[in-house]
Image 1 (tube, rainbow, N blue to C red):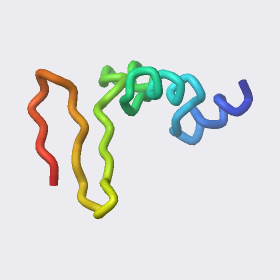
Image 2: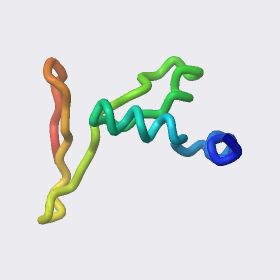
Image 3: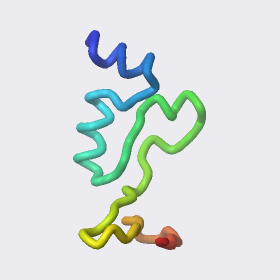
Length: 65
């Protein structure tokens, strides 16, 4: 609990965010609720050749760089 309190103060992800992100295969931050933002968003990853691409959910228009 002290760890998560510190993470919230530092505006970083909590253990709940990590577990939710792993379950949803997305980047999640539960404190986004307070700012009326999405809790989870698609992950942005780079491949082995350092090309940036976006892992988007179906129904969402996405573009990679």
